[in-house]
Length: 225
Image 1 (cartoon, rainbow, N blue to C red):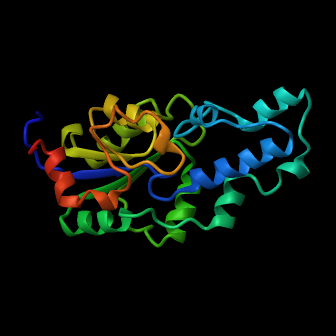
Image 2 (image 1 turned 120 degrees about the vertical axis):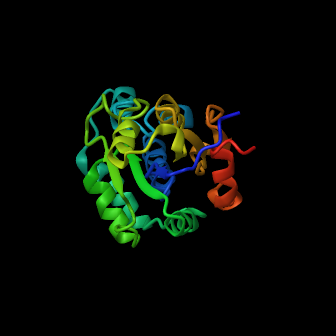
């Protein structure tokens, strides 16, 4: 059991955790594969969740077909297009966690393998742009993307918080690995796509954050049982 400590920061993954863009994008590419007579498995797709360079669905489909896919066929299937069409909101429990953390004076951060411009666009759209004390993003750098702990270490350094006083909220194996390697207590709250993946490396796994009251999460993270 961890020594009891005061939790000073809660660090959220973004895609799939704060908003569920991942399920919509996976569904879009699965339709693309079926239109070309192929299936896209979750196991294949999972290699790219929460990281960079893990799996390129277009490159894989082109390899199967033995030819390039014309750009007109790909229109509307980018992350930006799919997210814009679906207009995903906050996942269950996220808003309550943000409100509780702010009420208790606990710093909030985002740790994402995506680009800063993507995160900024959507936190503004979601009405939560002003709540984050730090935002750490990979911005195309595969070496810094999860499962590397670098982004978590950057966020902790920016907040001047020790890893033992922080909690990570993640949805994927790559994200969990990054948090745990950085020494951060990790809660996994998977979405429809990641729920079937191996999340056992997390300290706590819940179907969504609204199943784990914020106060109880703090107790678990602080080593209070």
